[in-house]
Length: 346
Image 1 (cartoon, one colour):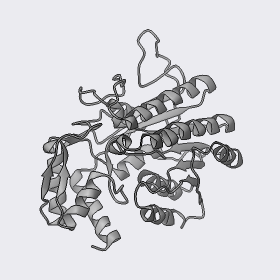
Image 2 (cartoon, helix red, strand yellow):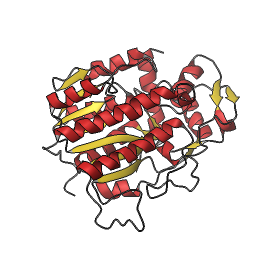
Image 3 (tube, rainbow, N blue to C red):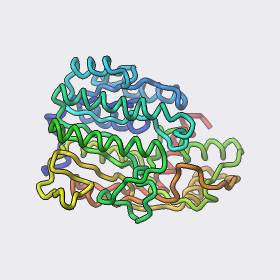
């Protein structure tokens, strides 16, 4: 496997799609610190406040090794031209129409970005000799599964939102390209990522804003939710290591008893989570303590497309890259609150 502390000199030029996004920004910063060259593709859409995306980009543009290109990866020709011109060593696809609830309102945006955009990325990789494609999948693919912790070896054929279905589709599309064109691909199922520079549509951001503005917070499933909350720095560390850990075939894979996490071709999927499920009410308690304010809670039923609990088995990830996320919610939420107060000057 080699020393995971060293940077692969072969994978120096990296495309990050969604570079102005929450995870993309953190990952790009880290790769730039390592002396790699990063091209960030982001269409700066207005799904949430664009100024936050611009401010993340401004952080990245302090480095001479970063270049931002702005267009939609669903644009087939422009995506093909970018790949042909830049000749990337590795690609990390983080651009996606995110959010489970939004998929009930605007399903077409998920098809445009998560399916059409993704096939354009696959084609770019195929035609320009990219050595490794790493892409964001999601804990949402576990759908109606209830056996905990969720394992990459479990079947994931019962999605409960179009977002989840699009992420499962990405894994299948990647497998096809690994099979047909020997393209190494690795899918990462992220579990509830939070932290500084986070997404305003996610619970921690929404709760913090509401509590500071003396508004009630919406608590779904009457608070009986559990999540494997994963701190952004842990996610970034995992992704960086995975980039250099290029997917390889599993020599023991058998079509008689197909393993859903590996393949006879260079294709892998891993969970990246904290390997620890926390009750939503506990998460809110920690936030209240950090803010020094008690939340007024508006208890609501479960939302369509949502699941009551997520919990990641990360043993395959640990075996592959020697890293396990471990940031506690006490530390993670505190760092988020410090960032939020500083960024919004509250």
